[in-house]
Image (cartoon, rainbow, N blue to C red; front, side, top):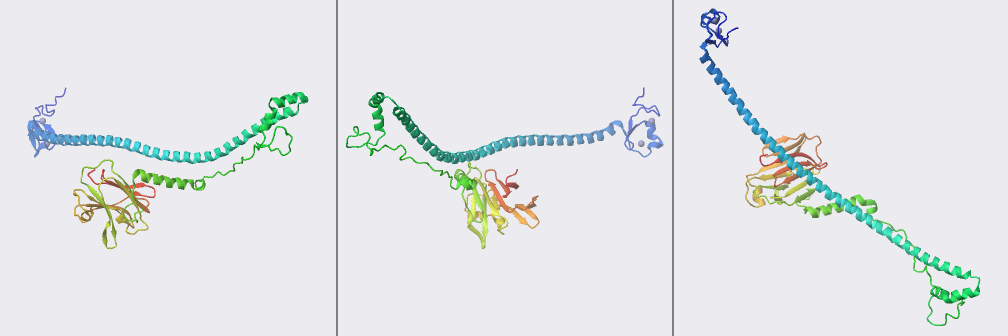
Length: 380
Ligand SMILES: [Zn+2]
Ligand SMILES: [Zn+2]
């Protein structure tokens, strides 16, 4: 059995280590030609720096491992936060669409009910006519059976027992004169069972709903949505659409945004608006308004105390966030940073969504409501 501590060549103990060759040597090897000029150390001394090197490497690795573990638990936390948010958003979208479905369903039902009521009037008239016909037919049958009686005595018996009364009820009441003694009077008038009745004509119509139903429903819906969300039109008419949603909770921070538009001679306070809480969405036509980028610019004031809109506008402490259209494409400016966005189609109409509570700004292509870019103002 080979002993690793013994030099196979000189049978001496391998007490030394040649650092140059990175192998064990014995005292005789050390003086041989093979290791002339090599760095040779006792095993203990040679091992020490190697071990130190190894420990440094290990420390580096455990540092990296710690860092990765922290990142993994942070990522896991972010994922579970996202899952909670995703569930919230999904149920919110379901509720929103349920409200839309309900609105449409109720509208459809109301219009159909109108139609059914009009149809119902005709059906009701038909049943009046049928009831009247039944009355007439009943009398007809009764009188027919009497007129066919062959036996005069039997007939008179019937006449006296109620036949006379039956015939009298068919006649128009006469206030004077003896009607009983002169039954055959040719001037006798009978009560009409047809007079006062009419055929209800087909007048079914839904008016404008008949041919313009979709657009009228859309309009009604927009009106009702405006009421529900208390949307208000603000700013310049050049903002084609401007919606706002009141805050659910009042934020404690002092972070605020402002949006504004530039007029020909500089800034106009009339077109300046501070947005402290709530959610806003507005759109501008990119093609029609060359100064459109001002409509899609907001300023973010991270540490600003309450002050007037005018003071804010010229405050030093703000960050401008805007979307720019250049010939080569669409750019987003966030403070001093300008980044070209990967947008396939240059939008004709741009929308900006601002959420004060989340300090979030999203730019959209308003034609299809796809999100082009989102800026989170706080570190996120
Ligand atoms: Zn040796
Ligand atoms: Zn050597």
